[in-house]
Amino acid sequence: MIAAGANLAIQATTVEIVQALANAGVRSITLKGPLLTRELYADNAARSSTDVDLLVPPGAFETAEALFSKMAYELLSHPIPHDRPLNAHSWRTPRGIHIDLHRNLIGMRATAEEVWQVLSMETETVILDDGQVEVLARGACALHVALHAAQHGIRYSKALADLEQALKVLPTPSWRRAAELAIRLDAVAAFSAGLKLLPAGSEILGQLALPNALTVEAALLASSPPQTARGFEWLAHVRGPRSKMSLVLRKFFPPAAWLRSCSPVASRGRIGLAAAYCWRVLWLLFHAGPGLLAWLRARRRIRGPG
Image 1 (cartoon, helix red, strand yellow):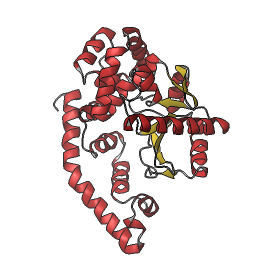
Image 2 (cartoon, rainbow, N blue to C red):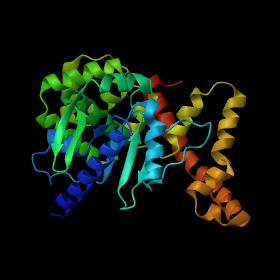
Image 3 (cartoon, rainbow, N blue to C red):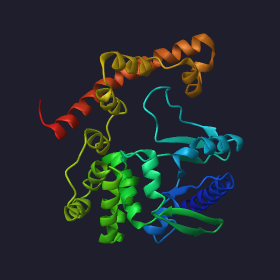
Image 4 (cartoon, rainbow, N blue to C red):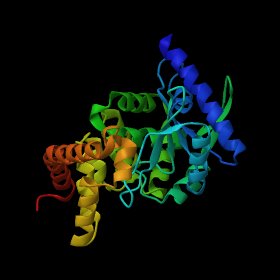
């Protein structure tokens, strides 16, 4: 009963946001939530939803965020300036419901514009109690579920449960369509990594005849690595020692305004800011070792020793 009530609250908020975006001229695609309930779970209470995930056109991303600010939503994610861009920004409504606003999806290496162009043609409409929302069609849904499992890896039971359910209920043609979309969106590596997390997924993967395209990043994500592991992969792709050093320094010493935006301690004057910087340096140094080892293991797995 509690899960069903939470799902209804999430659905009501989803419809409210989708309608507000539509009124502002922004089309949106609802991810997970109503999509997975409709496609994978016959019982609305079988899967509890805790947040709202929306994909919007990359050109309308700033418009959507400006609307959220007007609606008194609180921005929770604060990307470091000139650092690796985030695929989504997290917001919180005054009622405490979290929203992830996406312009791209982790695992898709196509541009955000290409992702929207393809996925916006792979949608259906779902009628909810409070209105209607646009969701991914079955093939795109299968792709998204596999990518979500790959993103969170072996230690995130909810994404694995969704993948397991999808492998049970979605027919083979849906997985074939998912494979076609993965090729178009340069998502074969993450799609394959996600399916390989479960025996049934490996079996489906064997039927799809996809090229072997596993990447270091996909292997990292599927292993649920330490938080710093992906940073080493990003650093490896930055060209030139000066650019690499600049990235490392930004990680250790981000702009003061950024640190204040995401750390309450940093907002308590100069002493608080200094303490926040010290804590960040210590945290990164403490977690750097495990992250480096995880990255090296993934690299050896993909590229072989040496």
